[in-house]
Image (cartoon, rainbow, N blue to C red):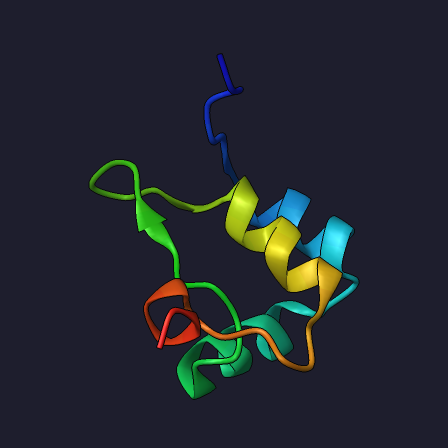
Length: 69
């Protein structure tokens, strides 16, 4: 059975990617970084699998919906 996809918070995402907070949000707006997942009214995180895909190849990363085209 595969491991469940964890939701990781911004502090972990910033540490793993080496991006600044402003660069991360700019890349999200450009569509070149995975979007957040709402986990509560005031909380959000990122799917760990999406962050891992971005880390593997940040220059050519695209959302899964576009990558399958």
